[in-house]
Length: 266
Image (cartoon, rainbow, N blue to C red; front, top):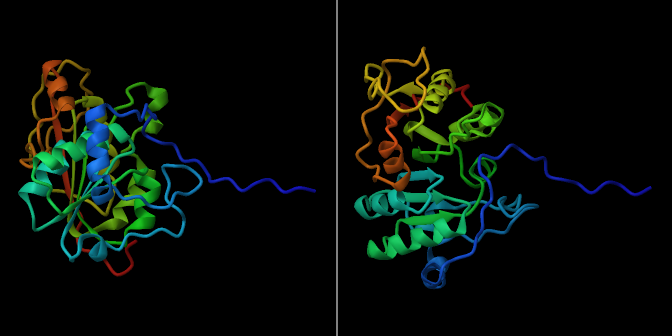
């Protein structure tokens, strides 16, 4: 009797794989810089998963011990490239599965004079980061304009959901910041419901007002009127945010902190 091959359990992913074909300029940037910036880890049973034995040694990776900023879904790298150049005292890790976005990030890093304090990780964040990073290693975690998955049947694919938080919150250091933004009111409402329920998190701006009351998309009747963050100064105006504003949607910023752990936490 032949045994069935072992399969990796599939979790619901928040992304849809698109073409990885690169334009000539992006390919040239990749050829010049990928060996320096893109982490080429051994893969597991899928190309967006690391080998089960893979780990990241952060002091070895960056050549020092420094606070770590992680951006999940870094897109074309506007934020992570600007942050790495502007804040040399911190290290930065961009997590993005799309090769064109990573290649464009390399082009931005080149225009920013190649800051040494950034690396790009081409893997699925939710299953990969808890394996690759030690607990309490992230000083700041960014999730800006994730796919809102607007149809009700797709809400399970939203990145900000309990399984994601179960995986990622143990990686936040005491006092770490979690910063998020979306231009969809329904997703902002969902984020607040999911995040406010977590005892590991505390709102940074409990009295912060909502960004407005008039938006082009449906506004939930029970949308919280306080607890919103001001626009994060470190966030670059990306094409996603600009499109949302041009369409008449509000920009909802959220910011949380990780209070000091009790000894029995996590």
